[in-house]
Image 1: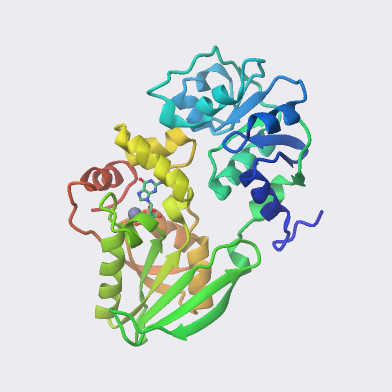
Image 2: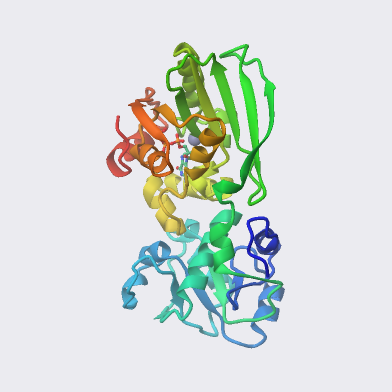
Length: 351
Ligand SMILES: Nc1nc2c(ncn2[C@@H]2O[C@H](COP(=O)(O)OP(=O)(O)OP(=O)(O)O)[C@@H](O)[C@H]2O)c(=O)[nH]1
Ligand SMILES: [Zn+2]
């Protein structure tokens, strides 16, 4: 099987996961818990007892992480096969929204995980597919076979190209230009909006991660909508600059998983703990894509509008010189005050 960026195997595997079909990664057969149904699970197991793989963060939430001597504390955890580990039980293992309402039964035992690389790749693929990171293992009948290496190469920034550019009069700047990007390695159509007129100075740049709820629906739970509008105005006021609109909804876990995180926030968990309880990294974004877009726009020296030092570090690691970090803080409202405080206290944002 070819592992080139344009390889279709990962796209096929994502489609299989969405439709509830088993896949194989490096010959380890897996069925996503979220999209499995009784019939597909029975076919997959064919009489065998199921095991379930979950993330280290999810296992810690369920108090299952301490049962194993893992060399790597981030390694996926495999819950030992048991005949009573059925779809409903696995769903409770996978989905934290039921944690408070239905305390887990068990006893669960964390087995030695014989396939740490393949199962870690499976959890990454679940995030890419926007699914809960949890899989049945120990069955057969995979619909498609892929490699962990191919998952690592999925959506690599190097494959991004400029696909189209056009004049786009906007409220912030009637002379703005929009540039759209496309990649043979992934599905996302990232966009740059160029405002004002280049004047020889490094452009003021904003990396904006997609937030459907904040950008479009006027959500007050986050600061994304006001930050987006304020960034456009600030860039224009500076004379010139670029807004990168990155298709990284929910800090990279996708819209549906972000809404699951919101449901957990309704139960009292903050934005950091909600991601961990779901089994994801606190921030799953990779800003290498933004660096690639700036390279393609021939802007390797910038001023960056952000409160997040991780964005600066990530761009610099990818060869962009950030000559200045420009703070981008907006007044809180009663619905996002805790979210903003969590960013300040737990994720290193500088306000
Ligand atoms: N997983 C998750 N994502 C969220 C939540 N609230 C907002 N987001 C996402 O967070 C991203 C917005 O982050 P940004 O404003 O780009 O970046 P930042 O890391 O806060 O840094 P700044 O540049 O300082 O604003 C968007 O993709 C939102 O969808 C949440 O509670 N959970
Ligand atoms: Zn938002």
